[in-house]
Image (cartoon, rainbow, N blue to C red):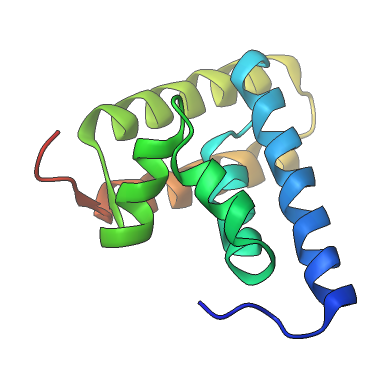
Length: 128
């Protein structure tokens, strides 16, 4: 990706990326809150705004290897898929138990199915 040439737009991308890192960090400690998608969005924003922040994220000791595999090969480790799908369906089950609105329940299940299919159809990394 190429850096955006306009300084205000680069700052906006960097700000968006930092907000996504914050949201992804929340997802590490809050069950059911998505994590990886926020870090992928942050990487996308940092590629357009800051090589330093992009490098920091790609070399991060916790999330860096997963992001590098996605960035370089668009692959997801099998273990990551299992954890993501299991967590997704556990949180959907809890939500279905707690919610009373039928249309919201149906919407959650449809979204969960779509996310599950998306994850299952992603290539798996060769070295996992």
